[in-house]
Image (cartoon, rainbow, N blue to C red; front, side):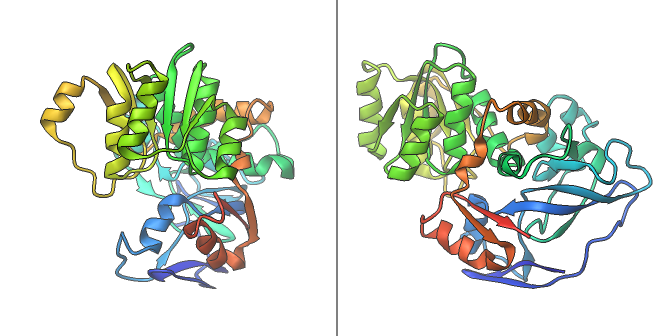
Length: 338
């Protein structure tokens, strides 16, 4: 089969790779129905995360089970499944507390931008849908494998509750789905920080009540102005830069909560400044597996449509253009069809 391989900064190739096969009795092989480019894929693509050898790319996936190992019991060939970007056994102490992305046996899913994918620890990682979905549902189900689950974790970690005010820092796919998550959790006011028209429009559709275009000090000042100088109850930090993290901390009222899911790059926190901010910080790699059963129900029953973040669809062999479009911000998120 052919799949996506990153050779170095902005050097994405679609080339021959070995077909995946069952290596352990806990493995499953799925035929990928849809995959995509993630914002986090852009860090190595841009050279911020150096790679030392050609690297298969992609960690978001959904599709039909082709084959399972002898120990796999929870899924079977012919079922439509999706899973988190982290492999988990779903039985270790961390998994039992809902932190499957810190599973004692965790692995990152590698090489999902391909027609077929091997998923280790299939029983703990994969969740089957009630039936084979329609083509129209596939983008929204695909979004659950990372960006919707990550946006949901950001809102959950930020303690978004009915009647509260939330700010979402970041207008990429995760930030936009953080808006959707905050709306589902009952936030009364949702302030989206965005300056791109197409993203602002989707943020409004997903439930944003206010848009703030300013950044840095000006962004914090605008949020304080909107909240009578108090700050907000909850902030979803969905970027991972020093500016975005400080903007989140300084926008939060004393006693408020920050859920941070942007992969940190160059973020350093001043201990004394954090001490006197009086805020709660919680985040990390999203435990997507914790939320999958409930999120699948929401998509299946038409309650949410996270697949709207895919504003570009390409055949998998045009994956390099998908990376370029996201890098140049011509696309929010690119869906790839094998």
